[in-house]
Image 1 (spheres, rainbow, N blue to C red):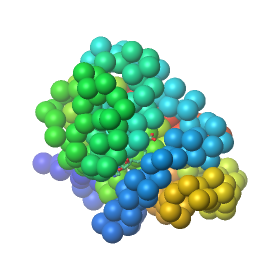
Image 2 (cartoon, rainbow, N blue to C red; image 1 turned 90 degrees about the vertical axis):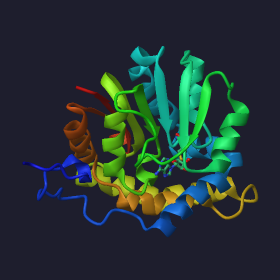
Image 3 (tube, rainbow, N blue to C red; image 1 turned 180 degrees about the vertical axis):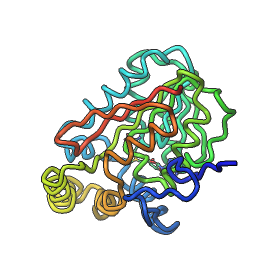
Length: 254
Ligand SMILES: C[S@@+](CC[C@H](N)C(=O)[O-])C[C@H]1O[C@@H](n2cnc3c(N)ncnc32)[C@H](O)[C@@H]1O
């Protein structure tokens, strides 16, 4: 019998060329979550600015793809301060599960969104507490890069989404093209920390947005992520923004 490996949905024995040793330690992962908590008062404004005002457009593209699921259940995985949930609610989605391992962020989201539409769940994407095929869509914005185990998270999302249900990842991307990757990496490692330091100065402790750098370093290339998603969901489509520095990855469960 052929056994499926949980990593990237690969067959046992197969290895992805790019996905070695990319998992953070538990300590590093906690630091990332705690950095998002620290950034809470300024998260929405600063994250939009350091994306060069492209994050909102990327979220919009992701949410548009989910419109078919508007009357069903959508999980916003890694809901954080709630930017994507806010957009879902504005577009008319009425049953949203906001899932996050941070009680601080979930409390915040619960305090700003209506109780009848927003349902907070304290959990991690690697172990989604839902039945197989029980939700219409999963959306994960700027969060897959932060999780402990992206492979398990993809597998879990695919498990809980119903047949023909939809899946969207919006995130920072690592382009396959070496020139594009050079400029995106330069921005993430040098430009973004400088801009975010200026924008965070005296508003929160330190510069929590610096945590984007190690998560970017661990990130697989856009092609590898797309291939992994296709393997797990049966299909996938990648839209690149800013030469692949920002991606909207969509898939429908076959
Ligand atoms: C950078 S924030 C993104 C928040 C929001 N989705 C957005 O678009 O602005 C990443 C979020 O992922 C959450 N996260 C980290 N690890 C996770 C995991 N294993 N499962 C689910 N969420 C996780 C963090 O707590 C944080 O709220």
